[in-house]
Length: 203
Image (tube, rainbow, N blue to C red):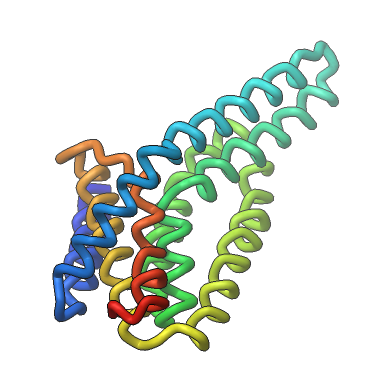
């Protein structure tokens, strides 16, 4: 896992160096973090996960073996779907895939998800495999949306969106290595700041 974390960090660093003007990246990250912290996206995602987990655990109270098996499949599906979908890597990877046809982050995420799903499937069964449908739809919708934007946005805007997204990927890699504990979800708005700068012809 540490080796994969190093690869994720490397991908983030290499992508962040594509822009010529670091000022645009600094502005995007700063404004994005302010927005993200005010909304507290990280906390909202955690609350969503806790809420769904509580709802699921209440439904799991049953003495019937057949119902218990169905609930276990449901639990595996919801828990693994949350793990694989509710995270910055899914969003950043899908956006980069749609904007610049760079699928490296999604491929790295697929490896991570694959390793995690083996352990989840051992305890929660086939429901974990069913979560792949939810992950495919979730990431596919984001990728298609970003692909549509790529036909509208200028090359510079896409470049700096990629730079900012790559910094977020680097932060994820550092979190995986336990070097620091960055709330990457709170930085997600930063990816869209270059669009605003592009509208006002700053970029």
